[in-house]
Image 1 (tube, rainbow, N blue to C red):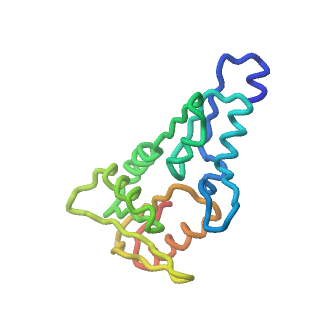
Image 2 (cartoon, rainbow, N blue to C red):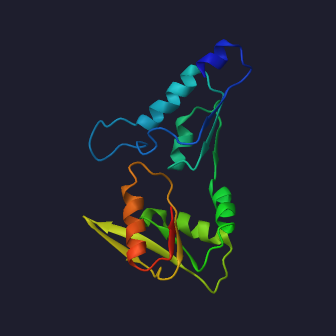
Length: 173
């Protein structure tokens, strides 16, 4: 951003496919925790960004971290992924959310696949303590695990392992 501005760019659009510190978007129950997601927005604006383009922001409030002169376009990555999975010749597809918070996202993804209404496969993994549970049937299904962001990959791996152990034919994450 700085280099473009110093080179007299008329405008600068920051393309940010993965927004840094997206999970740190609000105060936690503990007092005086930083809201690092807001700090990233302030840094980009201070450097002179004119517009921000991101994909699947972790939460919509991130758009509000930027001032009114810096529009934020949050693109939905699902259409590209749906096209990819249409080419995969899926058999008995099931869409799985690795946690309860992502159920709505998984439902929208399933609708985007336009799978026959005779195959209403949706499932969700829930984790209580160290125990992961699968709600729904994935036996004989090609499973697509849909999540908004992956940090360590632990949640995705646990969900994939559980789907395999419950008879999933193939698992995509």
